[in-house]
Image 1: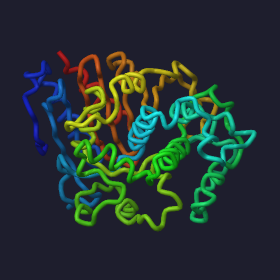
Image 2: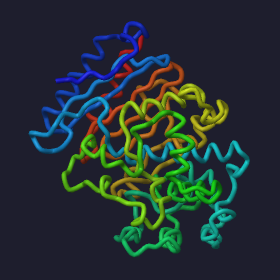
Image 3: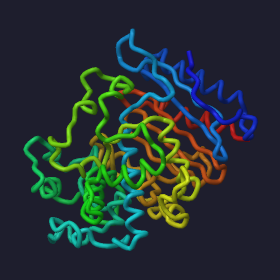
Image 4: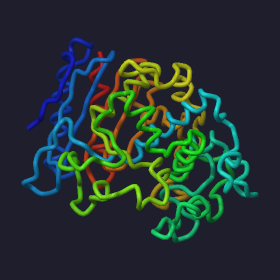
Length: 373
């Protein structure tokens, strides 16, 4: 069954075909029935009004698990990078950093022959040349283990050669956003998570978004593997650096994801607060990297290249069936947040799974955009 969340209006009120909502519900049930996903939750809004918000499936893998409700929580993985990007945008607006500033001026471990030219812009756009997810020049992953410390984590993560000359290639890089989070911490004087909480989450009223989840909310978290409960157990004391969270550690809900996305579509305002300026949003959500070749994912370093367009921390025009200018960020485990400024339409969804599936990461978007009238 579908569980109904709070809405502001009907689909017809915002020129959206109500039959498309039924098709999306049917797709959710089909994906759950085939065990492609464990649960689905989505929210669609247009002109600032939520017209569909539903969920289905289980909160945990066990067959007798409670239901995934419209306000259930889920680690949103790399969607966290969008929050890190907005934190950087805020510091740019305040004149505390500048876009093409070399990182070594803030993080001294970058002051090497190899890393000296890497800029904040290159970190934001995944063009730094630093080692990226899913593609390695040797059979060993980065030394991200329990021996890293607060004093050496940056040097450890910078170990090994650059994969590409900085600025020449797009390669999705978790470490880049850890370093951006460290820049936020260094420049603001606040630990990364506290900065994001005080300057983005709280002003937007995102009350269900946390880096360290309160005990009373543990039972609301969706897990796709009962052993994968790290998000419930982590503590501040065990972290070598909170800045590591900048690449993907936020726990959130679809309604809270909507608040963040709506802020971007509204030109930087939300919940009565100005988060960033309108022109900053316009710049951050346009393609600064255009059709640059990407060598990425699953170890296929040179046989799966594809062109990509990227803004200042957000992907632009990811799918050909979307309106030109649509921007997004996704997260591992089925996290989707897409904003369409021309149609003033957004889609926030969590399609919980342990793997990537085209029919749960791409098909819901195709269905959703087909309903615009």
